[in-house]
Length: 193
Image 1 (cartoon, rainbow, N blue to C red):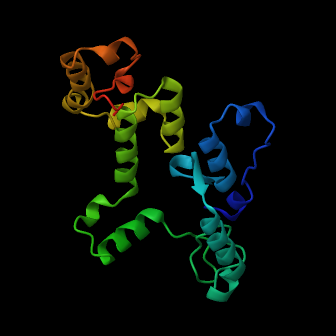
Image 2 (cartoon, rainbow, N blue to C red):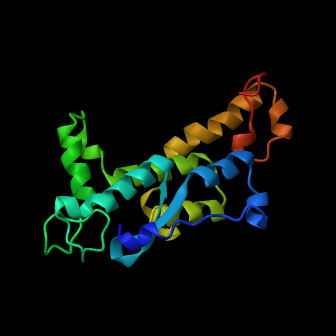
C-alpha cells in the first residue's frame, strides 16, 4: 500500500441518492469503515476496507516510520525498514511466515488466494446478481470471467445446498414455494428458518 493510498479515504455525502438507498446496516458500515485503494497484481487497483482501529495503527506507523529507519523517499505504507530501500513488505510473504509461526494446523491454507477462493465460494451460495458478483470480483482484484472460471463451486455442492431445499420444501407440502422467487426464499420450517 502506497502512502498516497491512505489519502484516498472517501467520505459519503449523507444526502446522496446512493446513501438513501442503503439499508440501516449498510449506512452504519459506511460510517465506520473507510475504503482506500492500493495497487495490486499487474497494476490493478484494489480496494481495502479499514476500520477505526486499523486507521489508527496506520497513522501511528506513518508517524513513526523515521524512528525505525524507513527511507523518507519510500512511498509505501509497509515499507522496508532500512535507508536506501524503496521497496515494501510483501503481504504474501508475511502471511506465509506468520501462518507457520502461529502454529496453525494447516499453515499452507492461510493465504490470500485461499481467502479469495473462500469468499468467492460463499458468494455462490448467496445467489448473487450479475452486478453483485461483478462488485465482489472487482473487490477481490479479479475480473468476473476469472472469478467464475477459477472459483466456481462444484456442481455437487450446489445441488446439495440449493436443489435439496426445493425438494424438502416440496416434501413438506410446498407451502413456501408459492412465495419463493429463488432458492434463498424457500422456508423449510414453520418458524421461517
